[in-house]
Length: 285
Image (tube, rainbow, N blue to C red):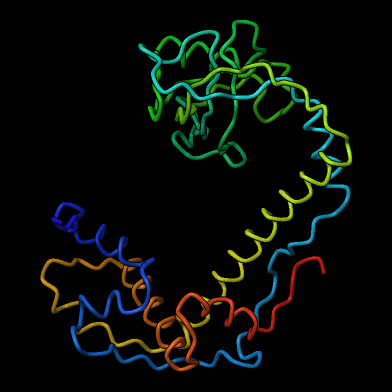
């Protein structure tokens, strides 16, 4: 089968190789030779990590999620093909950020607190201000999915946030998804069953967030304390152009492989092993 690497490009090819099992980089960068890795300390609490979000989910959070679920009457369903783009009657998921507009001494400067992601906006005529202006701008331009536009928005004089009342700012809006809100069938299962299901979902999300934060701190610590001799290897690969991020990712991969070799454990067990060895302090615990 023909390799996909040539059309991926150097950085894409490196990114593709990162998740692979051990020796993925060794095979390409140094056939028959092992990259020299000097590991920093990592056992018996040598890596101390603090501020990791706890995976614990409070009852209040579960109750709030259940209340929110009961209040939902509709669900967003993405539409892949919308013809001329967004139109009245549809709903968009947008990202946005505001910057100082024309006439302001800091024109073009980002305004703190205005950056939002995954904001759901119904495209309907009776939206209150200033959202009505967002609707007009998105619909009049027929914005499509993954299309970005910048337009001015004027806030009402009586707007609840005094810093914005009566001002005009420029919003850059990215339409990530276009869809419609469809009626949501009521969940007729016993409340206890629904609550337990939500609790399990929240615990899974909390654990994922906690592990991601812990892994990032472990990565930072070991990249700082370990020595990985990759310079000669990367220079010997003519097609590769290694930027700082891809080189760091490559070094991390080699560190994980070396821990697996030293400890005699499978590559997939290295991160769980490092987590167990670290001295971890969780936030709010």
